[in-house]
Length: 164
Image (cartoon, rainbow, N blue to C red; front, side, top):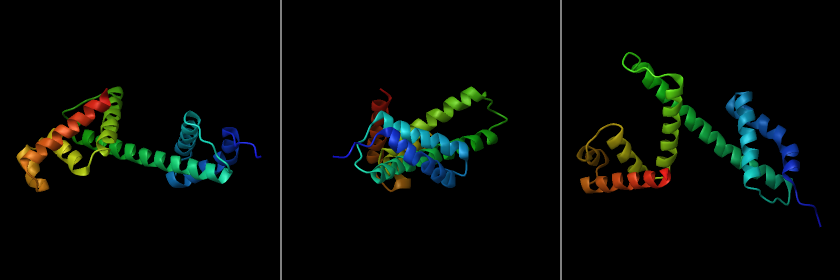
């Protein structure tokens, strides 16, 4: 009977490879190191049992891919925020801490809305961020105003449940 593969064994066997693989994808050693560590922390928090080291490599790679997607999504949101701040530089001044809170809030909101059907999140954003009326959104999406009202309610209930 073979010994179970420990997290330490998985870490020693795959951390250097994972760090190198991530650096090639991200183009930044520091970000690659952070994401590699985050991947192993996820494995530490929610332990898995592997019968082979290759199984562990596949699993940790899947975790790292998800973390990369999260990283790129955050970067996209941060970039959009910075661009909007540059356009509003004459009218809005926020210190770094305030900007960080806003960006973190936008990232959480993006994660919440990503869990909704695309038309529901689109209707919610059009209503709450862009200021469109339900009738305007209904016309954009070629749906009834009643459906848009239902979508907005669905999005609000979803966000309220997640905020608790």
